[in-house]
Image (cartoon, rainbow, N blue to C red; front, side):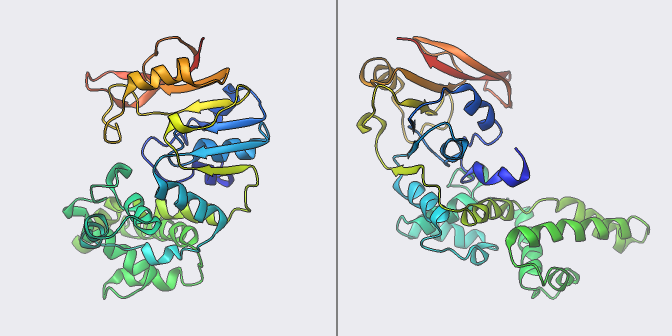
Length: 312
Protein backbone atom coordinates (compact mmCIF):
# COMPACT_ATOMS: atom_id res chain seq x y z
CA UNK A 1 0.00 0.00 0.00
CA UNK A 2 1.39 3.39 -1.03
CA UNK A 3 2.10 5.94 1.71
CA UNK A 4 -0.61 8.28 0.43
CA UNK A 5 -3.18 5.47 0.71
CA UNK A 6 -2.35 4.32 4.24
CA UNK A 7 -5.51 5.97 5.56
CA UNK A 8 -7.32 2.99 4.04
CA UNK A 9 -5.96 0.86 6.87
CA UNK A 10 -8.61 2.39 9.08
CA UNK A 11 -8.31 1.83 12.82
CA UNK A 12 -5.28 -0.10 14.10
CA UNK A 13 -7.38 -3.08 15.06
CA UNK A 14 -6.92 -6.79 15.67
CA UNK A 15 -7.28 -8.72 12.40
CA UNK A 16 -6.74 -5.58 10.28
CA UNK A 17 -6.55 -6.44 6.57
CA UNK A 18 -4.26 -3.56 5.60
CA UNK A 19 -1.64 -5.78 3.96
CA UNK A 20 -4.20 -7.76 1.94
CA UNK A 21 -6.97 -5.26 1.26
CA UNK A 22 -5.97 -4.31 -2.28
CA UNK A 23 -5.88 -7.98 -3.30
CA UNK A 24 -9.21 -8.58 -1.59
CA UNK A 25 -10.81 -5.70 -3.46
CA UNK A 26 -9.43 -6.89 -6.80
CA UNK A 27 -10.91 -10.35 -6.14
CA UNK A 28 -14.42 -9.12 -5.33
CA UNK A 29 -17.00 -8.44 -8.06
CA UNK A 30 -18.42 -5.00 -8.79
CA UNK A 31 -21.92 -4.24 -7.56
CA UNK A 32 -24.39 -1.59 -6.52
CA UNK A 33 -23.96 -2.10 -2.77
CA UNK A 34 -21.12 -3.59 -0.73
CA UNK A 35 -21.80 -4.92 2.79
CA UNK A 36 -18.83 -5.35 5.13
CA UNK A 37 -20.48 -7.58 7.73
CA UNK A 38 -17.73 -7.75 10.38
CA UNK A 39 -16.17 -4.36 9.68
CA UNK A 40 -13.66 -4.22 12.54
CA UNK A 41 -11.15 -1.43 11.93
CA UNK A 42 -12.89 -0.46 8.68
CA UNK A 43 -10.00 -1.19 6.32
CA UNK A 44 -12.07 -3.11 3.76
CA UNK A 45 -14.98 -0.64 3.92
CA UNK A 46 -12.73 2.38 3.40
CA UNK A 47 -11.01 0.74 0.44
CA UNK A 48 -14.34 -0.30 -1.07
CA UNK A 49 -15.75 3.22 -0.64
CA UNK A 50 -12.81 4.74 -2.49
CA UNK A 51 -12.54 2.05 -5.18
CA UNK A 52 -15.37 3.22 -7.44
CA UNK A 53 -16.70 -0.36 -7.64
CA UNK A 54 -19.81 0.32 -5.53
CA UNK A 55 -22.42 3.05 -5.26
CA UNK A 56 -22.85 2.44 -1.54
CA UNK A 57 -20.74 0.75 1.14
CA UNK A 58 -22.15 -0.48 4.46
CA UNK A 59 -19.56 -0.66 7.24
CA UNK A 60 -21.07 -2.79 10.01
CA UNK A 61 -19.75 -3.94 13.35
CA UNK A 62 -21.66 -4.90 16.45
CA UNK A 63 -19.25 -2.93 18.69
CA UNK A 64 -20.91 0.47 18.74
CA UNK A 65 -17.97 2.54 20.01
CA UNK A 66 -15.67 1.11 17.32
CA UNK A 67 -18.10 2.19 14.59
CA UNK A 68 -18.61 5.58 16.25
CA UNK A 69 -14.84 6.12 16.55
CA UNK A 70 -14.28 5.46 12.85
CA UNK A 71 -17.16 7.75 11.92
CA UNK A 72 -15.90 10.50 14.26
CA UNK A 73 -12.41 10.37 12.75
CA UNK A 74 -13.55 10.26 9.12
CA UNK A 75 -16.04 13.11 9.62
CA UNK A 76 -13.81 14.90 12.17
CA UNK A 77 -16.89 15.25 14.37
CA UNK A 78 -16.37 15.35 17.28
CA UNK A 79 -12.79 16.48 16.75
CA UNK A 80 -10.10 14.66 18.72
CA UNK A 81 -6.81 16.40 19.44
CA UNK A 82 -4.69 13.27 19.09
CA UNK A 83 -1.70 15.12 20.55
CA UNK A 84 -3.43 14.69 23.92
CA UNK A 85 -2.87 10.92 23.75
CA UNK A 86 0.80 10.65 22.82
CA UNK A 87 2.19 9.65 26.25
CA UNK A 88 -0.25 7.66 28.37
CA UNK A 89 1.17 5.65 31.24
CA UNK A 90 0.34 2.11 32.28
CA UNK A 91 -1.75 3.48 35.16
CA UNK A 92 -3.74 5.74 32.84
CA UNK A 93 -4.36 2.86 30.44
CA UNK A 94 -5.74 0.60 33.17
CA UNK A 95 -7.85 3.44 34.55
CA UNK A 96 -9.45 3.84 31.12
CA UNK A 97 -9.88 0.09 30.78
CA UNK A 98 -11.26 -0.67 34.24
CA UNK A 99 -12.89 2.49 35.58
CA UNK A 100 -14.19 4.56 32.69
CA UNK A 101 -17.54 3.97 30.94
CA UNK A 102 -17.51 2.72 27.38
CA UNK A 103 -17.07 5.61 24.96
CA UNK A 104 -15.33 6.45 21.71
CA UNK A 105 -12.52 8.13 23.67
CA UNK A 106 -12.03 5.00 25.79
CA UNK A 107 -11.96 2.88 22.63
CA UNK A 108 -9.37 5.21 21.09
CA UNK A 109 -7.11 4.82 24.14
CA UNK A 110 -7.48 1.05 24.32
CA UNK A 111 -6.76 0.62 20.60
CA UNK A 112 -3.73 2.93 20.62
CA UNK A 113 -2.15 1.60 23.81
CA UNK A 114 -2.87 -2.13 23.90
CA UNK A 115 -0.53 -4.95 22.98
CA UNK A 116 -1.48 -6.42 19.58
CA UNK A 117 -4.52 -4.08 19.67
CA UNK A 118 -6.24 -6.51 22.06
CA UNK A 119 -7.75 -3.60 24.09
CA UNK A 120 -6.76 -5.41 27.29
CA UNK A 121 -2.99 -5.52 27.87
CA UNK A 122 -0.77 -2.42 28.06
CA UNK A 123 1.36 -1.83 24.96
CA UNK A 124 4.83 -2.19 26.54
CA UNK A 125 6.36 -4.32 29.25
CA UNK A 126 7.67 -2.54 32.33
CA UNK A 127 11.26 -2.80 31.11
CA UNK A 128 10.56 -0.78 27.95
CA UNK A 129 7.80 1.51 29.20
CA UNK A 130 10.00 4.09 30.94
CA UNK A 131 12.30 4.61 27.95
CA UNK A 132 9.47 4.81 25.41
CA UNK A 133 7.52 7.39 27.43
CA UNK A 134 10.68 9.37 28.20
CA UNK A 135 11.48 9.73 24.53
CA UNK A 136 7.87 10.60 23.67
CA UNK A 137 7.71 13.33 26.32
CA UNK A 138 11.03 14.70 25.10
CA UNK A 139 9.72 14.81 21.53
CA UNK A 140 6.39 16.49 22.32
CA UNK A 141 7.03 18.46 25.51
CA UNK A 142 10.80 18.79 26.05
CA UNK A 143 10.37 18.49 29.81
CA UNK A 144 12.33 15.35 30.78
CA UNK A 145 15.51 17.06 31.97
CA UNK A 146 17.58 14.69 29.83
CA UNK A 147 19.71 15.09 26.72
CA UNK A 148 16.73 13.86 24.71
CA UNK A 149 14.94 17.17 25.23
CA UNK A 150 16.87 18.39 22.19
CA UNK A 151 14.22 16.50 20.23
CA UNK A 152 11.63 19.12 21.17
CA UNK A 153 13.48 22.02 19.50
CA UNK A 154 14.49 19.69 16.64
CA UNK A 155 10.81 19.09 15.79
CA UNK A 156 9.34 22.35 17.08
CA UNK A 157 7.92 23.42 13.70
CA UNK A 158 6.19 20.06 13.11
CA UNK A 159 2.44 20.41 13.62
CA UNK A 160 1.24 16.82 13.34
CA UNK A 161 2.09 13.50 14.94
CA UNK A 162 3.20 12.17 11.56
CA UNK A 163 5.63 15.06 11.02
CA UNK A 164 7.07 14.78 14.53
CA UNK A 165 7.48 11.02 14.22
CA UNK A 166 9.25 11.42 10.87
CA UNK A 167 11.66 13.94 12.41
CA UNK A 168 12.23 11.61 15.37
CA UNK A 169 13.49 8.94 12.97
CA UNK A 170 15.67 11.48 11.18
CA UNK A 171 17.13 12.66 14.50
CA UNK A 172 17.67 9.09 15.66
CA UNK A 173 19.61 8.20 12.50
CA UNK A 174 21.78 11.29 12.90
CA UNK A 175 22.51 10.49 16.55
CA UNK A 176 23.40 6.90 15.74
CA UNK A 177 25.83 8.08 13.08
CA UNK A 178 27.45 10.41 15.62
CA UNK A 179 27.58 7.78 18.36
CA UNK A 180 29.05 5.13 16.08
CA UNK A 181 32.13 7.31 15.49
CA UNK A 182 33.23 7.12 19.12
CA UNK A 183 34.06 4.26 21.43
CA UNK A 184 33.59 6.09 24.72
CA UNK A 185 31.38 4.20 27.17
CA UNK A 186 28.80 7.00 27.36
CA UNK A 187 28.46 7.16 23.59
CA UNK A 188 28.13 3.40 23.32
CA UNK A 189 25.43 3.37 25.96
CA UNK A 190 23.48 6.03 24.06
CA UNK A 191 23.91 4.07 20.82
CA UNK A 192 22.51 0.94 22.47
CA UNK A 193 19.55 2.93 23.79
CA UNK A 194 18.83 4.42 20.36
CA UNK A 195 18.97 0.95 18.80
CA UNK A 196 16.34 -0.24 21.29
CA UNK A 197 14.10 2.72 20.54
CA UNK A 198 13.39 2.02 16.91
CA UNK A 199 9.62 2.29 17.27
CA UNK A 200 7.20 4.34 19.31
CA UNK A 201 4.24 2.10 18.54
CA UNK A 202 1.62 4.38 20.03
CA UNK A 203 2.69 7.15 17.64
CA UNK A 204 2.45 4.79 14.68
CA UNK A 205 -1.14 4.04 15.65
CA UNK A 206 -2.06 7.64 16.41
CA UNK A 207 -0.69 8.85 13.09
CA UNK A 208 -2.88 6.21 11.45
CA UNK A 209 -5.88 7.80 13.18
CA UNK A 210 -4.58 11.24 12.24
CA UNK A 211 -4.69 10.28 8.55
CA UNK A 212 -8.40 9.47 8.91
CA UNK A 213 -9.05 12.95 10.31
CA UNK A 214 -7.51 14.48 7.19
CA UNK A 215 -9.93 12.77 4.81
CA UNK A 216 -12.70 14.44 2.95
CA UNK A 217 -15.99 12.82 3.89
CA UNK A 218 -16.59 9.57 2.02
CA UNK A 219 -20.10 9.95 0.62
CA UNK A 220 -20.45 6.28 -0.29
CA UNK A 221 -19.73 5.04 3.26
CA UNK A 222 -22.66 4.27 5.56
CA UNK A 223 -22.33 3.11 9.18
CA UNK A 224 -24.22 0.28 10.87
CA UNK A 225 -24.18 -1.32 14.32
CA UNK A 226 -25.89 -4.71 14.12
CA UNK A 227 -25.43 -8.37 14.77
CA UNK A 228 -24.74 -9.95 11.37
CA UNK A 229 -28.04 -11.87 11.53
CA UNK A 230 -29.99 -8.62 11.81
CA UNK A 231 -28.59 -6.96 8.70
CA UNK A 232 -30.99 -6.20 5.85
CA UNK A 233 -29.30 -7.63 2.77
CA UNK A 234 -30.55 -7.75 -0.82
CA UNK A 235 -29.96 -10.49 -3.35
CA UNK A 236 -27.71 -8.32 -5.54
CA UNK A 237 -25.49 -7.07 -2.68
CA UNK A 238 -21.83 -8.05 -2.59
CA UNK A 239 -21.29 -9.36 0.94
CA UNK A 240 -17.86 -9.62 2.58
CA UNK A 241 -17.35 -11.40 5.92
CA UNK A 242 -14.24 -11.31 8.09
CA UNK A 243 -15.46 -13.22 11.17
CA UNK A 244 -13.29 -14.63 13.96
CA UNK A 245 -11.31 -17.37 12.25
CA UNK A 246 -11.91 -21.01 13.15
CA UNK A 247 -9.45 -22.14 15.80
CA UNK A 248 -8.03 -18.71 16.64
CA UNK A 249 -8.00 -16.95 19.97
CA UNK A 250 -9.89 -13.90 18.70
CA UNK A 251 -13.41 -15.18 19.32
CA UNK A 252 -14.80 -11.85 20.63
CA UNK A 253 -16.28 -13.44 23.72
CA UNK A 254 -17.62 -16.47 21.91
CA UNK A 255 -18.49 -16.89 18.24
CA UNK A 256 -20.87 -19.59 17.04
CA UNK A 257 -19.36 -20.86 13.80
CA UNK A 258 -22.25 -23.26 13.15
CA UNK A 259 -24.76 -20.40 13.41
CA UNK A 260 -22.63 -18.39 11.00
CA UNK A 261 -22.56 -21.32 8.56
CA UNK A 262 -26.35 -21.58 8.74
CA UNK A 263 -26.62 -17.83 8.10
CA UNK A 264 -24.46 -17.69 4.98
CA UNK A 265 -26.01 -20.87 3.56
CA UNK A 266 -29.71 -20.39 4.35
CA UNK A 267 -30.51 -16.94 5.74
CA UNK A 268 -28.41 -14.44 3.77
CA UNK A 269 -30.15 -13.82 0.41
CA UNK A 270 -27.12 -12.39 -1.40
CA UNK A 271 -25.80 -14.35 -4.36
CA UNK A 272 -22.24 -13.08 -3.89
CA UNK A 273 -20.90 -13.88 -0.40
CA UNK A 274 -17.17 -13.90 0.36
CA UNK A 275 -15.41 -14.92 3.58
CA UNK A 276 -11.85 -14.43 4.82
CA UNK A 277 -10.56 -17.49 6.66
CA UNK A 278 -7.63 -19.82 7.28
CA UNK A 279 -9.89 -22.85 6.96
CA UNK A 280 -11.96 -23.84 3.92
CA UNK A 281 -15.55 -23.77 5.16
CA UNK A 282 -18.43 -26.03 4.07
CA UNK A 283 -20.03 -25.08 0.73
CA UNK A 284 -17.27 -22.67 -0.25
CA UNK A 285 -14.59 -22.49 -2.91
CA UNK A 286 -11.27 -20.68 -2.77
CA UNK A 287 -11.57 -17.42 -4.70
CA UNK A 288 -8.03 -16.33 -3.83
CA UNK A 289 -5.13 -17.70 -1.78
CA UNK A 290 -3.05 -14.94 -0.20
CA UNK A 291 -0.29 -17.32 0.82
CA UNK A 292 1.33 -17.95 4.14
CA UNK A 293 0.43 -15.82 7.12
CA UNK A 294 3.38 -14.44 9.03
CA UNK A 295 1.92 -15.68 12.32
CA UNK A 296 2.27 -19.29 13.41
CA UNK A 297 -0.57 -21.61 14.33
CA UNK A 298 -0.61 -23.59 17.53
CA UNK A 299 0.90 -26.52 15.62
CA UNK A 300 3.83 -24.35 14.57
CA UNK A 301 3.00 -24.33 10.85
CA UNK A 302 2.36 -21.30 8.72
CA UNK A 303 -1.16 -21.12 7.39
CA UNK A 304 -2.57 -19.86 4.10
CA UNK A 305 -4.99 -16.97 4.35
CA UNK A 306 -7.94 -17.59 2.04
CA UNK A 307 -10.72 -15.60 0.44
CA UNK A 308 -13.65 -18.00 0.11
CA UNK A 309 -16.72 -17.69 -2.09
CA UNK A 310 -19.94 -19.31 -0.89
CA UNK A 311 -21.27 -21.87 -3.35
CA UNK A 312 -25.02 -22.45 -3.00
